[in-house]
Length: 264
Image (cartoon, rainbow, N blue to C red; front, side, top):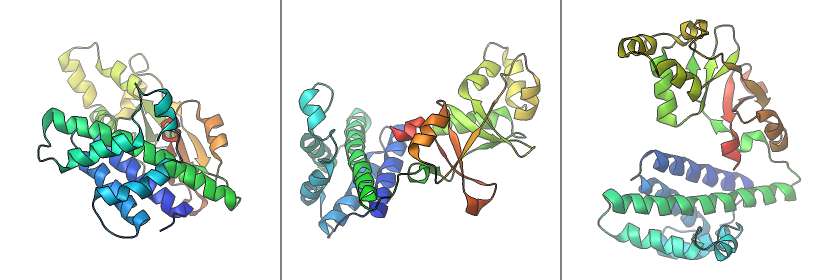
């Protein structure tokens, strides 16, 4: 079957979600493999094992320079697609999937996902260009955004950041505005004090912590961008920090956020 821009995007986001989950769990390679199997069965037009999926997946992967061009020049840093795919396929068939072995398999699965994501991104862009459609923020933003509220304690802000590996977390302020709390601000607030004081600060609301200007750095105002904005506009407005994405259909609600990391 042929990929259109919508299916290319859906499979890219599927792989991205599985890869991000594997980064959090060093043994969560199965999610990536299942995403690859879904893509392979779509391209092949039938359900098979990993082996028969390799030819159509390779054809897709070759859209990306990461499949063979870059590995041929930087072999000590990048593994060619065929070799990477065979390593994942063979390792998946082995019975022992624990400890260091599973972590090794997860690393290869992540690398394989990165190649296919890049190819799908190129495929999606090429299809849009044919239809004279521009790539927009909505194509790369993180949906169902996670954010904190100013009334919540520092403990939950810290927990959300650690759980999601966030450097910045959007905060809904009581005045209807959005701000960004950084991992640096939380670290400065909690480190270098006694255990008793740290316990008290963990239980302090973000709003109260912000009033302690000597201990808690001021929060940056969040920059909002419309979902229909171009990627070039997003990069110009980012300043290295997340952008909060809005939509006319959602009113004042935030429908997603976009970071420079999402555009790599």
